[in-house]
Picture 1 (cartoon, rainbow over the protein chains, first blue to last red):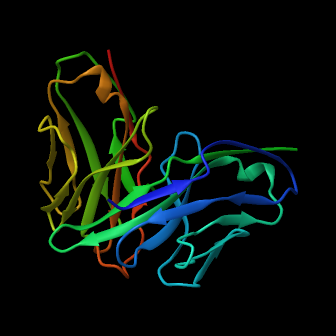
Picture 2 (cartoon, rainbow over the protein chains, first blue to last red):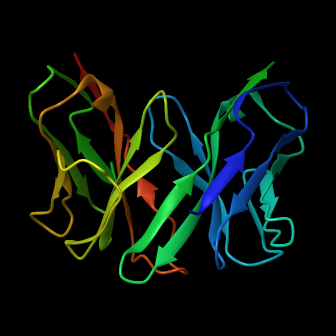
Length: 115
Length: 115
């Protein structure tokens, strides 16, 4: 089935470091790709999405480019802040006739940024 | 103002009992979903509804039964609770389920502990 493989576990950085969280997907057809962020005690919040090859999604200094050739959607930020500490999930939306759509999430990467 | 209300925020239950998780959305969306997040698994799709009609069910157990009494309600009834059901259950909604429709918006979740 359709799936997402992303950087998992803990990612520890210092303020102003460069962030990369890798995300690769496996899907038939042309899925829509998402990055969600989750803060403690809250539900996942959409960062941004992309739905076609070479499309760049961006928000709050984070960005990712849909690459159909490498089946990737890596999250990057040039200079992280302590307030970026959260769990980041890559997800894809698949659609099937008659059953609508659903999101498949990666396992999440917990980013901790120290001052 | 909360856009998706999930009640209760925390829930403790004994093994074998039955509980209902409440979800109401005030976004005017016509598609609603349930996802589950546990310590062992990432965010996992459970159900999707569109215009109060079940579209997809990825839950193996019939102990989980969604109930939609109104267009903006999608409750989740869980019977014969087991300790493995302990998780945070997220309700989400979106305007439609098509490829070009918006990303699902998530509530803050109900954290269920089964003793």
